[in-house]
Every structure is written in C-alpha cells, then in structure tokens.
Length: 499
Ligand SMILES: [Zn+2]
Image 1 (cartoon, protein in one colour):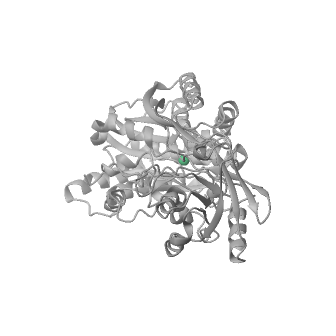
Image 2: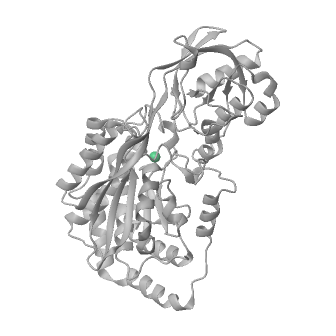
Image 3: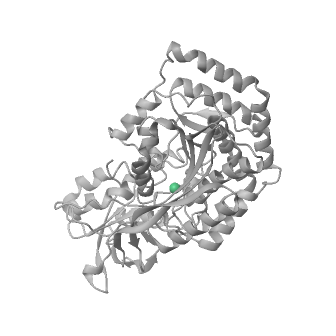
C-alpha cells in the first residue's frame, strides 16, 4: 500500500484517492451485485429470522436498554474519562502508548472478557520537541503552531532556527505558477475549502496540503512549508497530523508545520498588500526510531458454535500528542469495548466470536493494523465483518456499511432493531484506516454513522478532550455498534461477500 493510501488521518476513506488501488478495491466492494440464485434462499431465511425470531428483537432490546438506561448507562464515557485522565495522549511508538496498552489489558481482564492479550508491533517513534513560529515582519508575534508528525526539525540551521522571507500561496497550482519566487523562502499555504457546507468532505479535499505540501515546496527550492490547519473551526488552534516521509533527491526533506486558520489567513492578507513577511521557524522535531515496540490490544467473546469465525469491532488506541485523544479515537476504542462488556453482562454469547481490537499507531498510517493483518490474513475466509469507529461517537443515526447487495440487505434488516434510539439507518461508505486491508481482501466493513459535523473542529488539536463527547450520545453509539456486531455474529452464515 502506498504512503498516500496509508494516510493516517481518520481516515483514509475521506481522501480523494484518485486512481489508487485502495479506491479501486473499495469501488469494487461498494458495487451492488446480484445475489446468486443458490444463495437467495438462505438470504431470505436469514432475513425472515431477523424479522420474526422473538429472541432477535429481545436480545437487541436488552443490549440497547442496558447501555442507554440500565446498568451500563454512562459507563462508556466514564471509562474513557478515567482512561484519558489517567494516561493522557498516546503518541505512536511512545512509552505512554505502552502504558495505555498495559492499562487496557488490565481493564479488559477485570471486565471478565476472554482471550485478553496484547500482540506486539513495530512502530515509528517521532519526537516533537520544542517548536515555534515567530513572525518578524511586518510585526513581531508568536504564532500558534504544531509541527506535523514525521517532519524533520530545523537543527541544520543551528539554535537560532530558520529565518526566511515567506511566500504565501492558496494552492499547489499557485505554487507551481510562482515556483521561481519560492527558492530560498518559507512557503505558507492558505488553502481554501468550504467547510461550512462540507464539514466532513473538506478534510479529504484539503488534507493533501498537510501530507505533501513540503514535497512541492522542496521541489522548487523552498526551505520549509507552513500549512493552514486542516480543520473546520478554530479558536486560534493549530491541528497536527501525519505528513509524508517520502523524500527524494529532487525533493529532500524540509521542516513542515501547521498554522492556525487565523494566522494563515492573516499572512495571506499581508501578502495581498505586498507587505514583506519574514518568519523564524524553530523545530526540534526528529524521527527517533522506526522500530519502537508497540502492541495491538485484543479481547474476545468466544463464539458458542463457530468460535473460529469472527466479527471484529475496533478503534485505535494511539492518539496525537496534543489533547488526550478522547474523540480520536478513545471513543471508538471504548464503544468497541462496550460491545463485549454488554454481551458479557447479559450473558449473550453469539454463535461466532466477537473480537475487540484496539489498534496501535493509526495516526502514522495504520501501522499496527497493517502488521495485524499480515499476521492474521489466514482468517480472511472466516472473518464475517470488520468494523472500526474512528469518525466520532456523536449522536448516532446508524451504520456506514460496505458490502454486496445481500450483505447490505441483512445489515439494513438488523438496523431496524435500532429504531427505538433512532439509530436504524444503514448507508454506504463503511470504512476505516485500520480495517482497510481486510476490506480490500473482500471482507464486508462497517463504521459508525453519526452526527460528526463538528469532528474536524477539534481533530488532532489540543481541544480533543472529554468535553467534546456527550455520555448519552456515546451510550447510543455503543448500542448501535453492539446490536450490529451481535446480530452479525449470530447469523446462520457468514455475511455474504463477492470474493
Ligand atoms: Zn483516528
């Protein structure tokens, strides 16, 4: 998989990937296919059972009641608060992420779950260090900034850092047109997207500036790249995220960092007035090692009849080093834990195994999940569905699902079991950075459909704290997640698929 495809961003699915293999695979998966006659009878039987077997409705109602008004009411949010308050942010490859792994293993064991363990991964460890952007002309001001994950620092310029004139551009095209002006300068991008009308899609439309602007700047002789934060909203808050580490002789590595929306816009106004802009950039950033020890965390409810057939529910345990990763992606990891928790409390054991995976190092490119897939790909034929929640745990309205027509019909029927909490929708676009390898291998994939219009307000920023999340909304997310996972694990057959 190319670096671009492995964009850690929450999420790869949001990117306009052009003609990438991942997109081609996903298009294939999304294409509705006719159901062969030989399987239509079993599909009808499955749908009839979901519609009329009283235990289906009763079990699902118990799951919803326990999570939203019963003994687990508020528990998912509280567990997440205790986890993030205690551990804090969990950068890929860091000792803190390992502390989080130990914490989770203990909690999952104490919760009475089965097969709780951590599977070792090899992760990159990037160090931010101290960093600053100081505007020197036309006035002196410290600008809020965050270095981008994977960037090099300014060590080569000595302790005083890099001081240079700034060229402000609005797009890659403008940089290309003004390439001769970029040599020896810091280039600042003030890329525009209509976030008000496209509060989620704008991420995919503009994240390439965060990911690869430094390569474009380096290629034309620029010394550093500063990017307007890829964010929908700002209180002068910078938003970080991974950047490409693919240097080449024609585009050697240069430092790159995010500015706030306000400061990027201000620099653009100054440039429009033909004011000379000079900036001092200091960054201690560096890649410390590429093979730090990390772990994916696993727990299961073993299937009663087909324990070797599996449904995965998941979120990622790592976060950026700012905020505490409450939304991205503590929420996704914790509602996935609650799926197993509620089934154990209700003593509901589905036919197939439901496996919780808390992935390591999504943010640097789905790294722990990629290694997990490599180690477990023999399970592709027995994997019924892979689900990852990594786009918020706000008010849920259902499931995003990617699978063939027969599988979608089953998921749509399961969705009706969630009408009592207005969570019954089943829409297309199931996706997730960490589950992408399974989906490309043909396994149906799901993500949570929720009112995440404000997701990119705090994404990858210091604002990703518990206060963004509402306990009752998180409970309903857990209920949507659990009802789907349980009923898929309890089907007569694996979810239908095309390959
Ligand atoms: Zn995420």
